[in-house]
Image 1 (cartoon, helix red, strand yellow):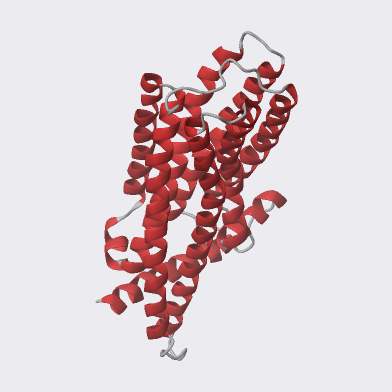
Image 2 (spheres, one colour):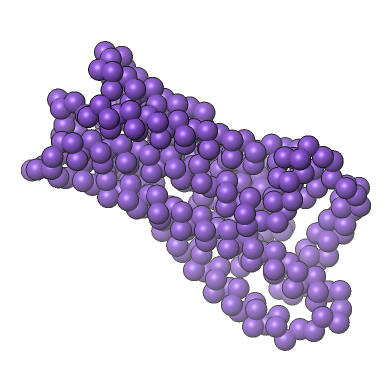
Length: 327
C-alpha cells in the first residue's frame, strides 16, 4: 500500500528519549552552523587581506547565509518542536507548521547555492574568457537573489500538498537535480584540468607569464578540490536523507518507533550539512584560512596596502594570460 502523502505513524507517540535526543543534537547543530557560517560571512564582509571580492566569494556568502538560517532559525525550531513533543505539549503541532516552511526555504537555497558554486567553477575553468568578461559583482548578486526567490516560491507548495508529499517531491527534484549538476560539473572540470595540466606541464618557469599561468591553475585546483569535498559531504548527508524519505513514504509495515527514528534522522542529516559546509572553505582555501586567522586573532593584516597592490597586479596578470592562452 502506498503511503505517499500521509505520515504512517501520526497517532503513535514517539519515544520521549528520542524526542529529547533529537532536540539536544539540534541545539548542537545550531551552535556549529551559526558560528561557522557567521564567521564565513564576517570574513567576506571584513575581507582583511582584500582578496575576497569576487563573484565566487559572493556565491560562497550566499551559501553561508542559507546555512546560517539553518543555524539561527531551523535548528532552534527543531529543538523546540522535539522538546514540546517529548513533553506531550499541545503546542507541538503548531510549532511543526513553523518549522518546516523555513526548513524547506533554507535547504532549497543551500542546495541551489551549491549548484551555482559548482557551475561557477565549471565555467571559470572551461570557458575562462566568457567567465571573465560576463560575470561581475552585480550579476553574481542578482543570481544570489534569484536563488532566494526560487527557494521561497518552491517552498510555498508545501502549504498546498502537505509535509509528506512535498518532502517526497523535494527529494526527487531539488536533491536529485543538485546531485546531477554537481556530478556533471565536477567530471567536466576534472577532465578540463587534465587537459590543461598536460599542456602547461610543457611550459618552463623562465617567464613571469608562464609562472602566472601555473599559479592560476594551482589556485583554481584548490577551489575545485574544496567543491569535490562539498560533493562528498552532500552525498553523505542527502543520500541517506532521501532513503529516509522513501522509507517514510513507502514502508507500510515498518515499526512506528523505527519510522519516528527515520523521520528525525532525515531532519538532522540535512541540518548537519549546513553545519559542515563552512569547514570546507576554512580547511581548503588559503585566502579564507588566512582571513579567518586574522579575524579570530583580532589583528590587522600586516602589509595590507602591499597585499592589495600585489593582488590587483596578480589578478591583472592572471586574467591577461588566461585570455591569451585561450585566444
